[in-house]
Length: 210
Image 1 (cartoon, one colour):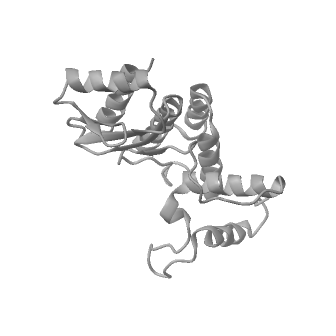
Image 2 (cartoon, helix red, strand yellow):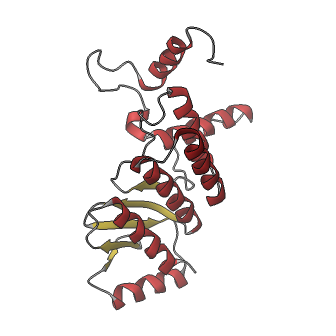
Image 3 (tube, helix red, strand yellow):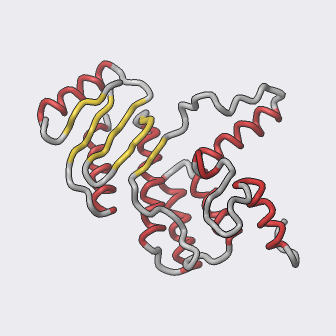
């Protein structure tokens, strides 16, 4: 719908509606995406639209057990100098966020390389984090927050068998694994590089997977 002459102005107007106009000469935004993140914002918007279609009461503030908060504190984006067109980037972001399988993400990766060339590190990180998110959903992970020293995992629900496995893991390597309140788990180590963080999470998920 934004292919005609002057569509850039229309797209900019939509952007202002979503994020707010912010400062005229600054980077601060007054809208909602900045506070909740693009992924959760899309999920909240999708829930609101679905509720309207079904004639139900809109409750976008209720806790959504399907949402997973993944934050590895590494660059995860499609850089502007890799994909210049804003509309194309937004479309690809939506497709990646809606991908339900690793095969779907791999298809998008192949398409990106075919259309725009080798993936920059930030784009590669984005696909890796989305892959981790798919794994996390299967393991009932609620959140994963990581920095260069540790990774904290919280779970939506823990079965007695899974809880026993967590306890056994903490007891076997107390210097590396620490228990957290609410049946959470902390992984301790040195994770300076993006690759180290991604590899550490994949290894941990392999250990925790049934």
